[in-house]
Image (cartoon, rainbow, N blue to C red):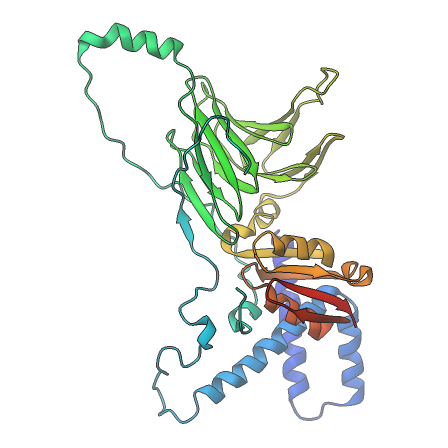
Length: 378
């Protein structure tokens, strides 16, 4: 990850140098040829150049919007904000999740008008610390000695408590503080059902993705089940994502044990141990583990900070990621467009800004509708 950050910084500085050189006097045909060669050398070069160009143009617009004001005077609120975006944050805020009722067995279950300049600047490259667990102070209860024997019997034989469900809508993130002191950050359009007993802390991920900070409790394993597999931990930080064909586990701290449910013939897949830095994909055919640095694992979870990070990713995959966070979908009409490779960090709340960049730098034509943005070959 540190190497990736250093590489990104070098590319951004090189793009800035090219931009300054182009806008200076004496730009010639051989200079343009050198720039074209640099852009063709890497998708990352091209994306960095396009984003810098967009930011450069926006800086010119800001100067124009501020024209006529006395020196040092700040424009009135809304002067620099398109009417359709006034009052809207850069991306939906992280909110505290409210428990949802569970009846019986738990069941699975606007368009941005103008281009957001903030979405076109470089995403923060610094390493963010892991979310800190917000302490909650429980009220203390004093129990009289008369019921001591009854309390002991309940402790030894009580079943799981009533399950509690937490969920998010498309385009929102929420934090759920669990009764055992653990914390779950739910991604867009996600739902978990939590059942805590004295033997086990069981979480069923019914859809979407969630990042967990499991409180340490060796006597009660922290189990997250999804798509025929379960991730088991004692006290660690990791995410679980449910996909149509399986699940993904990303570990940023501690150790997670990945297990499978018995198949039709009663056999199980081998158990896999995932140390920090691991990214595992599990389905009915087996488990594939990618071992990397902790920072690389954290980058795979940049959705918590409002971003999606791509590295030489197919446009089909990138569009599917944006669609997880937006009601207005990106639809790819041509196979040649789906196969294009993209890279960079983008705000997941502004799919239109992403598409605008595609139109500037790739053979892509976009058709903007209320419910979808359709991408065609150009």
